[in-house]
Length: 316
Image (cartoon, rainbow, N blue to C red; front, side, top):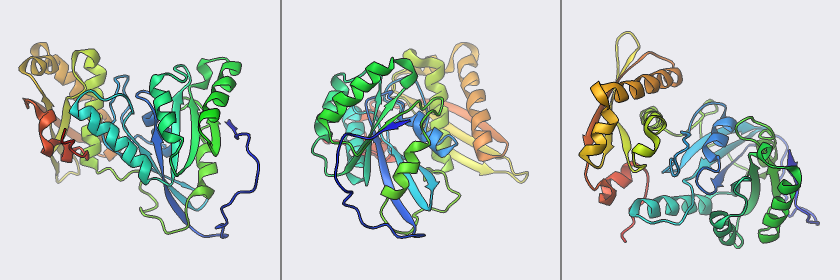
C-alpha cells in the first residue's frame, strides 16, 4: 500500500508521450539491514543481490532491472549508509551516496522497527537538499502498529519533501508492486539501456561470488569479519554443458582461514554445497564448485581490491 504526501499543486513534468519508451535509475538508499537487497530481489523476481543478517553485506552498486508499462527501471542496490570507521566503510558509504547522486529518483528505505534512529536521521538530513525526486519506502510494516507507522511517515515527511510514500513488506511482497507501477511514468523518455530479458548488469562470475559470500556469512555470521571477500577465479564450460567454477575466499588472518575451513573441512564443505545449489539454479546448468581459502593480509588497504569490488579507493 502507499501513501501520498500532503502536498498540492500540479505536476510540473510534461513529458508524457503515448507509447514512448522510458528508462531511468532509482537508487535505493538506507541504513544497513533496512531490506534493500530483499526489496531489489522481490522487484526483479529473481536473486540479483545477496541477503544477510550481517550488516554492510552489500558493498558495490548492484543493479536490478524491471520492465513496467514500457519503462525499464534500473534499481540500484547501494551499500548501507552508516557512520564509517575504516577505509572500507568510507568506500562503501561514498559509493552509496554516489549512486544516489547519479540517479533519476532516490528511494529511501527505512526499517520501521528502527524508526528515525541516528542513522536514518543523518540520511534524512542529507537528503533534504538533494536535487532529485525522492520517495520514501517504509519496510516491514507488519512489525508495528498502524498508528506508529503513520506517525513515522508524518515525521519523515516533515523533514524531507517526498514525492510519494510507500508502505511495504519486502519479505512478503505486500505493497511492492505499487513501487514500479508509480515509477514507470517517472522515468525519463529514452531507449532502454539493457536487453529486455536481462535482470541485472552483474556478470554471472560476479553474482556467483556474491552468492558464495552470502552462504559464508550465513554459516559463520559473527565468527567472521564482514571484510572477508570471495572472487571467482575460473568459470569453465564443459562439453556436457556443465560448468567448473573455482572460487577463492580471502580472509585477513590465518585464524580466520581455520574458521572457514572448519574441523575436518566440514564448514567449507557446507558452504560449498549451499552455494553450488543456488549458483546452479541461477546459471540453469550443473555447476561443479571448488572453493579455496587464502589469507590476504591488510587487503583493506590495497587499491586493487577496491577496484575489483567496484569501489573507489579512499586515500585517507
